[in-house]
Amino acid sequence: MSTRSNKKAAVIGGGVIGGGWAARFLLNGWDVAVFDPDPQAERKINEVLANARRSLPALYDRSLPDEGKLTFHDDMAKAVAGAQWIQESVPEQLALKHKILAQIQAHAPSDCLIGSSTSGFKPSELQQGSIKPEQIVVAHPFNPVYLLPLIEVVPSAATDAATLEAGCDVLRSVGLKPLVVRKEIDAHIADRLLEAVWREGLWLVHDEVATTEEIDDAIRYGFGLRWAQMGLFETYRIAGGEAGMEHFIGQFGPALKWPWTKLMDVPELTPELTARIAQQSDDQSGHMSIRDLERLRDDNLVGMMRALKKSGSGAGGTINDHEASLPEPMPINDLPVTGDRQIPQSWTDYNGHMNEAHYVEVSSQASDRFMELVGADANYIASGGSYFTVETHVCYLHEISAGDHIRVTTQLIKGEGKKLHLFHRLINDEGAVAATIETMLLHVDLKTRRTSEPGDVVATNLAEMAKRHASLPKPDQLGRAIG
Image 1 (cartoon, rainbow, N blue to C red):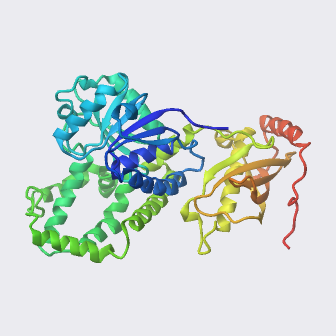
Image 2 (cartoon, helix red, strand yellow; image 1 turned 180 degrees about the horizontal axis):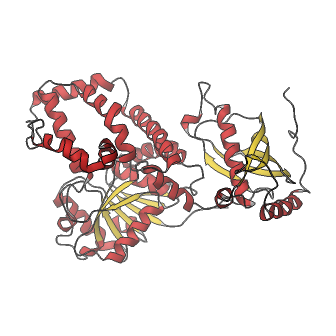
Image 3 (cartoon, helix red, strand yellow; image 1 turned 120 degrees about the vertical axis):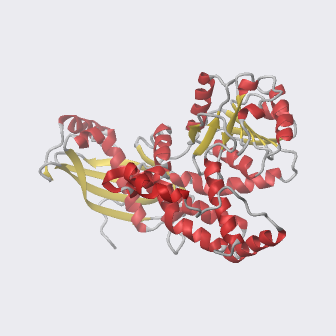
């Protein structure tokens, strides 16, 4: 069954950022129309899209909607016709943005918000001369747009609050985290922080204190890891110990007056300094192509965000919220679908296929989902009852590789008394069973940590499920011993 939304987004400007926007909407089921006079725009966006298809679905343990339709246009009116969201991502030249925004508004639906990817201009500057200023807001993303969830949304005094919230709902629906900026300010929030670090980094290279690689090492091995989960202020609150932030500021605040940094000055970007930075950057990672670096970056981001997903911290919470909003898959062959996902790169081994440990992980997730279906959900577990896995047998039938899409069906073999006997099938896109996983679980009283009878609701649901599955043929791999 299709999970397409039939919604349309228009992307005006098909560079790195515009391509990321296109991928973000497209992979969340939206049709996307791209307007860009660059004859290379289609090639560039398809290259960005290839990386997005490889990485964005790998963040989730549930399948994203069916991909939307991507079209390219040389006519602005056709590109924006019927769009529910329009994203402008042309170069950072105010006169150019005014020209493009005027063309967009001449043809855009009257109830459609127009977001600008500008990293520096205020919305009131973008709205100058506009026929409908309330239609334009800043929607500033971060590269890669298809992976990083943060979007700085900056309204102006002309922006209607209800319209702004509706726009934020659109962004949330494609897995983004809108951060509404309270006041208009040049460069918004995040880039002002980034600029401070960038400026100090330039001085360290200029004064030959450190190379570009050494500065990057200081970030990626230290505070960069902390910031990914807790940000700046929460990190410093912990640094204050039990006395908290007030103690931290009292201890380290006076140091801010010391002349350590050069944040109020900028080194002149002379040809010599530019050449030094460029050469050091080439020495650092010039052995890899830009596409190779993008894929390395994406794989690392997916791994880190999946770790945050487990705890719900930072970007992980946004992924969890988006995943919970994705539609439930339809049954296959009268069996519930208890898993529907793309295989992430991190799940593969040196042979290039999914490592056996992750087959068991898929089985665990499928068993958890089946438990929810019969009433042994989070509330049931909180009340003191659950099922523990006591035995698992995996049969490998076909290779499963990174990027493959699999669906898991679960057949109830037996669900009487304390025992729960399940049989999972991992089905690939060709409809073939790639693996089977047979698992036995026992119901446990979480207070005594001993086996016990399930609650009445769970027992009743299992009995009804058993009746529906009784007529199904027994799986060929059921009860199979090794060898």
